[in-house]
Image (cartoon, rainbow, N blue to C red; front, side):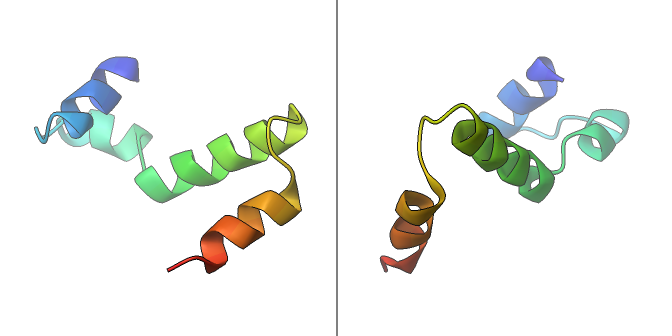
Length: 53
């Protein structure tokens, strides 16, 4: 999975099977949940940041 993320970050196609495993929206949602769970950020900080344009 990390190889697929590196390919996506470099602007390359990670391949069909890897792309199925790495869905950017799901990955971001999971990362935000983990950051909140680990108390790196709190929900209010995240919502405030989303409100910025």
